Image (cartoon, rainbow, N blue to C red; front, side, top):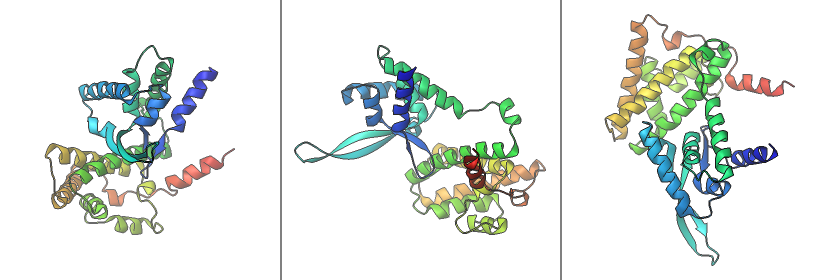
Length: 271
């Protein structure tokens, strides 16, 4: 048990969190923890994991992101090596395809399976959550969704991300930009509007985000102008769907009394 705790700590120690609060691991660091001495052999495991990912119907490039790293050799010479940014599911697949004779592989399988399960929730479990718990759950999904949407938009040629995101908001919110939404909600400068939405409003935005990402990939949309136009159109489509279902327009939904950041801060202060 002590060994498992120590190993789990190792997986946690090499975990990184980006600016979107999205967790990832570097393959080169995971290689060391999983006791693979040669990158060549570990990359074979990665390739098997990629194939498993592809067969499961999940976009491989969302889970295994190619990155280059600059290193200094023993002789002081600078060189570039390839690496991967891995999400939790990619790490799980690598563990599943690793050498079963290694005890650490079994530990990795357990660790990443448990961590992946913590991010999932059943419909029954969701129904008994409080509104604030639903907000937190949906906010985490929108963070993840925005991360993948940004990656897709960047590949499609988007450079002005404020313009890109405002195009989507304007479609969903009848012309309102992110700043307009923030002002209407009475938020402070740079306060996150998504942290100040109820669960229904977050769900509407998550649908806009996911459908836009799928549309950009499916139609292979490439220019910033067309990407922004697509985001705006999807926002309008989601708005129309809400209207046809006799739902409440997103701008008419009430703003929670406390932001999610406030709630999280209060939870940390509870002894």
